[in-house]
Length: 75
Image (tube, rainbow, N blue to C red; front, side, top):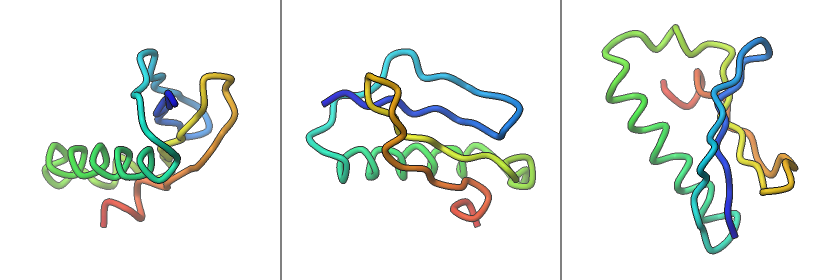
């Protein structure tokens, strides 16, 4: 199954146009948490910039499968 990981904050969207092949939703959540960990490493103290942002996991049809708030996850 292919999942797409969009970063959204209500006003802006950073769209994942490629997506990732995963076995199931649990695998997609694990991929999302790895991506969030990478954002944490790259943030260098600018975590506040992610307040209000979420990482949305979507199926190819655009249905929201899961959402992870970044600000809370990055702390």
